[in-house]
Length: 115
Length: 115
Image (cartoon, rainbow over all chains, first blue to last red):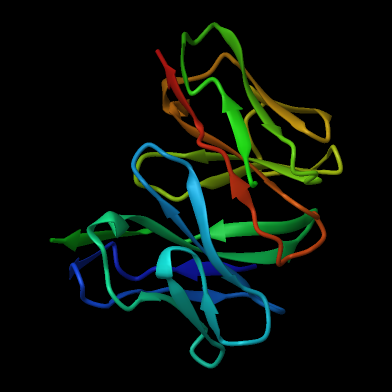
């Protein structure tokens, strides 16, 4: 069975500063890792994913994530935060279960970017 | 374009009512999903359809009844719901059910309130 942990309920960062939202995972087999963002009263928007290859993955809106196999982590990063990045961020892992692939989401991390 | 369309956006129903949530995608995706999301919580998988057949049912109560009439449409029929079923219901789709690395794309959700 797979699982994913987001150890921080909330991350606060000043606009213009770099941001990191942490994620660790547990999965048997190859990990398929995703980041999604959710703005208030909206659905989830896909940001980026890791399947294989380069450990540094670049995604939408200037976000990137680094896959670290030894630490089983997939932290989301952005070099310079914007106020508009304030939202709820979900890390997700996809693994093979009875019946097919299932995507399991972390608890979410709320990002506040202060002007 | 990646678009999953859900209707209605908001639904208020009594505990004795019968209603349906509808979802449509025209991306040629062959896997479709229903998730339930409570406020500030991660989405919880309810059902997965793979090539129009139900492949995963996460022990969802029978008052929720999914239906996949064709490869583009997914319905969730609701009957005799409880107030605790009030939540955001998210529909999603992905390209190939058997590929773990495929991205799941979400709709904007249907807000359900049971009174």
